[in-house]
Length: 208
Image (tube, rainbow, N blue to C red; front, side, top):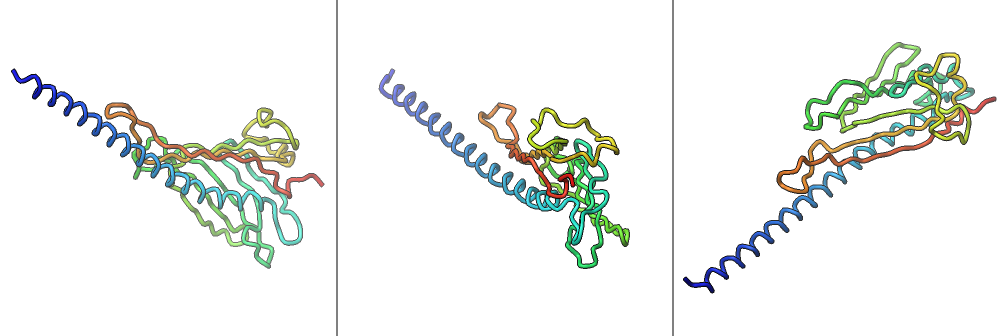
């Protein structure tokens, strides 16, 4: 028996396994980096529109809208604003709603449609934008005092007679990848998540 030949085969096999493991690790890391970048870009696009809308809550060219907030729930908000800054002062009803409608063109079972709609209250026309970018959570908390800890948020849905007491909003958005990354060949894998959260103090919610 040629022990030298056997030893060389064993050593070669170990080296080959090491190379394959390293290649797999590099491939998985590359996939995770790519999915992380894509997920962050998707979240950034949603946030840009969301921040624009929230900051203009209650805005009109000469005064505040009345009312400002129409409905306030943990995954649903409606408010008025001259969102397009039209010179005629026409007001729109803006809605952000995290629906229970699953996105069907993704492998992620937690991916649901985040719906943004803009209704022109003068004409009744509604423009709906279903956002299908991997949103797995959209949560809003409402605060009736500036500086109040988020844990002391108002109960939702906020009662109609309490809507005018809202001073701040705390919003959390989670966007996940539509495919999993795997650490090992046989693990369950995980979806890459991008978490964004922000506390808003829209100027028009300030008490007079």
